[in-house]
Structures are given as structure tokens and as C-alpha cells.
Image (cartoon, rainbow, N blue to C red):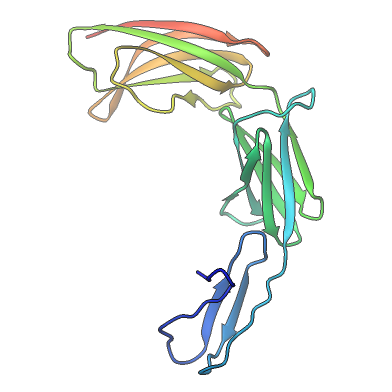
Length: 222
């Protein structure tokens, strides 16, 4: 890592030419070969890359919070994440000219867009996520139940299940799913024991745009 003046002085250098990769956020990555000579500094001039602002909005144009944005050059496999700058606002900087794939992951669903870095802004228009409040009560004689998992399973085939952030051993509780797309779901309570899962309860719940939904799960074990 360089110092405050952008200088880097390695203490140990192998003999012969060195291959160096220079990276800094907002600038194009440079890879170069250099044959070091005693007392002779090397000056590297970084070039500013392209920046793309990504907005996530609903039908009215209002920002939609939550979610993550990833990107990769078209034809490549590995994804990089865009930096979150605020509700429904992301930035990807230091990009070379060319076509990229941008992916928005929100509320168990993914949106994919192709975008050229010569265009400085990309907009994803999505349904505004809703909140679902799930209560659970498990009647049991055991002092604890290992781990309970809670999820919302959508009936639509193009959406993935929405899982709670962390498992819990509490036999009663409430979980707030704050980023759920409108639609029909089933709230499912699962018990994990010895690397296997058992379903304890299941209830349907309908999520309507602009409304919060509630559902209660009751179960007994064993």
C-alpha cells in the first residue's frame, strides 16, 4: 500500500523484471513489467475510469431501499459489487470502456441488465417491496430446540425464497421481513437437528403492494 503521497518502497525485490498490478478505486487497473535499478524511481500515472450510477426505483420514480447491485464485464464469470451511496443508489467506478452486465438482487429476485459504460446512469424499475411480520409459537417440553429457521416460500416460480437473517432457538418470537415483493407466499417454520430439517408449521400469506402483512405460525414438538 502506498503512503499519503502515493509512494511505495518495497524492501525486498527479486532480481530481474517484476510484474506489478496497480489498483486504486475510481481508476483503471494497470499491470506492467518493470526492471528496477538502484536509486531510480518509477513513476506511474493512473487513468480515471468510467463511472456508472445505478438507481433502483418504483413505478412512481421513488427510491427503493435494500438490495445489492453486482457487475461484471460481459463474457466474464466473476462479479464485483457496486458501492451503496444511499437508498436505491449505487455507484460503480474505475471501469474501462465497454459492455457490462449489471445484476440487482432484491427480495429474493434478480434483475439483469446489459449496460455500456459510456452511459453514466442505469435505472432498475421494480415493484416496491413490502414488510411481512411473522409470529411463531412452539409448544414443547424440551428446554431448547436447537435452531429454528423461518422462510417465505413464493408460489411464483420466478422468485426465490426469502429467509430470516439468523436462526434462533427461541420457541416464541417475531421476524420482520422488510423486503418482500407483492404476491402469494407460504410462511414456513423449520426445525434443524443433526443437519436435517423438519417442517413444524406452514401458513399462506398474501402480500399486496403498499401494505404490510402479518401471519402467525403455531406448532408443537415432539
